[in-house]
Amino acid sequence: MAKYDEDDGVWRTINGQHIFIKEGQSPMDAFIKQTGKNNRKKEDKADEKISSEEQQITLEHEKGKIDRDYRSFNKMKENLEELKTNPKSYMDRVYGDENLTKEEYEQKVQDNIKYYEKGIKQWEEEVMPHVNNTAKYIDEYKKYLKEHPNSKMKFEDFIK
Image 1: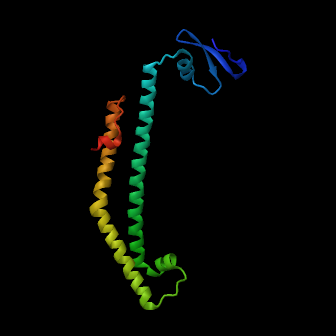
Image 2: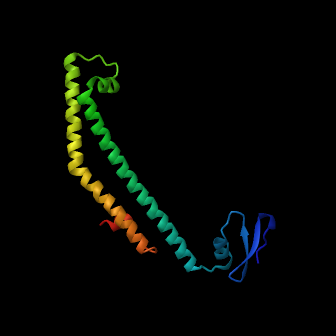
Image 3: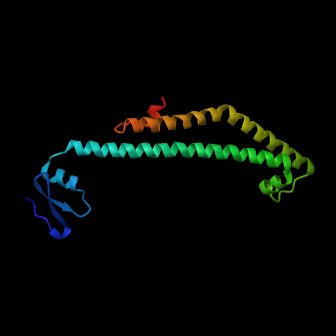
């Protein structure tokens, strides 16, 4: 048996084996290192826990993307509304002290209005369906995980 300095850890009995656990070492690591035995059931449970944590992180990430998409869409609508109702406020905020001629100013207002109208239309036609599907899939994935708590299926695989 190897010599261990008891100031650097503690002795414990694990599965009937007298095991020295070094400070900062997990009992399972100490058991495997000192006995050469590998307890697969405990490792499988650790994998399931990691998988479950990864599933939660994926869900939070997808929710975050949806939130960012909606915030972006709403910001485009707000900017368009401001351009149409109070262009001076928008132009002062965005272009600040730029010395624009009246023609340049009017052109920038019109260019920005077209930009936001195009962006909103594109968002409604292309992004909105994807966002709505993703939100639906998140709900279905949560339901699936509740019904299958030991599943290791990733969100990306679930929506395929």
